[in-house]
Length: 618
Image (cartoon, rainbow, N blue to C red):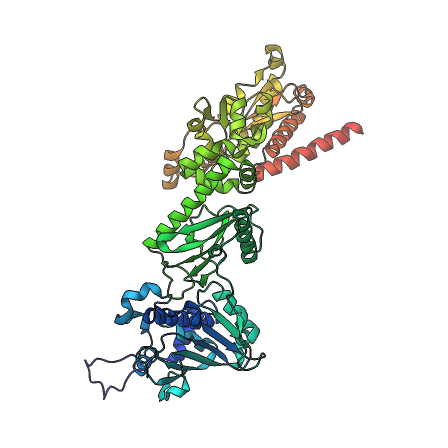
């Protein structure tokens, strides 16, 4: 920006910004538009809006009589329309003033909803690929209006000329670009044709492309030969479903598990949602393909659907959604929020139909997307009632539905972590306890809601005491014989705040069970830190937070031959080493992360036992 001469502008006088157009174009290319390719979309969009205005001026004109023609031969790119055109005054008002938009002019303010663009800066995007823009236009508002020529250059200068009617016999506008050498990637004939199909395949007005090879007067290739697939008629419902699925596969590159038609007349939205055939990572949101009045707005519009709907990808065309300034995403307003809610309801209705009438489809859907459905069921009572009995969970009976599991186990126990489930699964199963792994996202919350569906079922969190209560005690004589060993074991494992007990339980091949919880370990760690920081502000704070944390329990299985041999050891050091080894093995079987001290203990006990075995053999 440059400042005016102060002599011509005395202190206190109003001044005018001096715009560096090259700097503005650089701003557009790096911060507003995602790619220079949008220049063609902006030109096509202007042409569509001009045709819309022409139809408003001449409602009786046949829809197919007015169209858009694109030309690219490697040396120029040209976009011509049969739209409303511009007068000399329009050119000065709308092309020579940056930021002014004809679509905001008072005379068409009431018709704004009929136009795609609303920002009036689209023509500047042409400077991303060319140094000069040539516009030739003739207005349809006045029968004998002359042609007007406007030439704008990247340095901010422009010229306007009035030409005879013969320069453009019919109303409309032609925009011609001479591409820069570095813009060939976006202005080659094949690329222009591909971009035209990419952006304009669903436009209602006929669009053709000509690369100059067919000769003068030859008709161009159609860019949008057919209407949107949901706007066509089909002989049977099955043919319609197959056509929509084929379109979804063409657009997204995968064969949909099913297609869901989307139709919201209130906002003029139509389209399809394609159900992904495979699971996607939790929370990963796919972009959706959104057209506004036929023109492609974005391929990555995440905001059109709620977060839980990551099992579908949508392609929609809408009349009333509002684009952002870059016209590459949607403006977040009440209309978009209402559309998002309405589309979410369509997805719920599809799930309900599958649950009620197509169990095979429902099974395939849940196999791939049970996590998405679980995330929905947590907050949606209707989906919860319909699908909770069908959802798969990891249990002590294997992977099964909650409905089947509840028929076998009247009391359903649920762990709070995956780690706790892995610690107790085999032993709980042998003891006849029904335990569900509640450590996965949403699972614990959903299991606790089972009584809402099955009132006869009881759900409770798994408490270590519940499990140990199902382990049989050993007889008094065996307990007394093992007392010395148990005392040595408790002393060896005191550093881990771990008690040791002797019980009998199935399966007999399990030598030991480590009963511990993440919360208890965190509390013990906090208590230890408080002891180390005793006498200081930090120690006082931690001391106030300290609770009596339950100790871990290493439960040895008297039915296991290795344990029976261990409790009979009469060498104190070897007894301590065997207890450490049993603790390390039980800790590894729990599959929780090992603390450094535990890793060191496992290595040391293994080497000590190996050394003992070698000494004995020698």
